[in-house]
Image 1 (cartoon, rainbow, N blue to C red):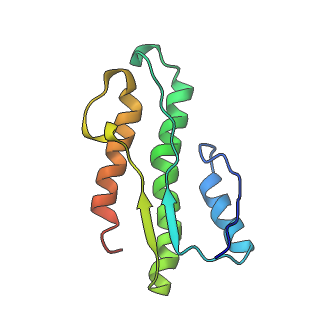
Image 2 (cartoon, rainbow, N blue to C red):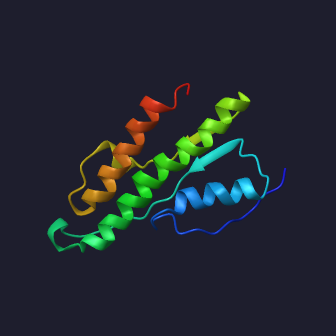
Length: 119
């Protein structure tokens, strides 16, 4: 087994597609996708800058779903592959000073339960 490191800011627009294309260009096959990106934002919801919240949502929800969709299609075509969506204990309870982070992790929890059982 060989590991390849491709650094990418997945909170940037178009990053998921660019990463998938790069993997394809390198001729790599992804058999196991581990979606574990995210970062917490701590503070009063009203006081947190929108830019920072947008980045955490883009990374924790949009990029996660897009990467999963892109790579799962290939896995289904090969009839081989696994996806691990990493959530957080924050997914199970409202966290007033981590509102956006916990809500995003709840999304990951339920998305995984609904979409990935058997793509």
